Each structure stands twice: as C-alpha cells, then as structure tokens.
Amino acid sequence: MRKLYVHKTAVGAFYIAEHHGRFHPLFRNENLGSYATSQQAVDDLTKGRVLDSLDGLDTATLAIPNRVQEWARLVH
Image 1 (tube, rainbow, N blue to C red):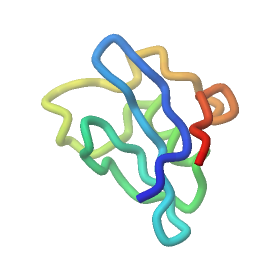
Image 2: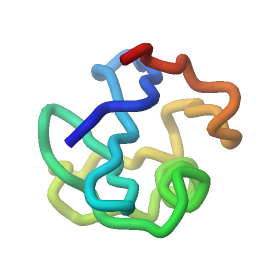
Image 3: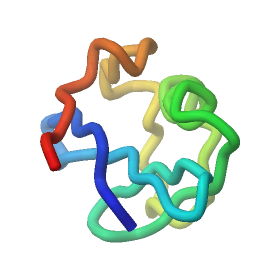
Image 4: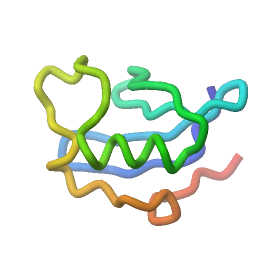
C-alpha cells in the first residue's frame, strides 16, 4: 500500500493509502475499509463510520478534516 495522505490527531496519525486503485483509511497499520475514492474514505472517518476494530474510538470526535485536500499530502 502506498500512503498518500496523513492527518495527525491526539490519538495518533490516520492515513489514506492507495492499493490496486482502491483507497484505504489506516490507523496504527490497521486497514479500516476500502473505498472507490479517497474522499469517500475521509467521509466515513469524519462521520465515525469505519470498522468496529478501533476499541470504541469514535473517529467522528477527532476533528479530522472532512475534505481530503485539507490533509497533509505525502510525497513519493
């Protein structure tokens, strides 16, 4: 997976990565889903709609920017 974007929060960094044309939100190297666009991945993070594997962490409460353009772009 190639990490494209990052946003740092008080609980750690969230990434949006691309793999085989799909976009995956990552937290602590855990894949939180698969989306057709990077914006869809961000939308689900900001609304708290990600996999239940975050031990009760509600991503909607983390002040994650709701536009992927507001995330830091990683240079490759």
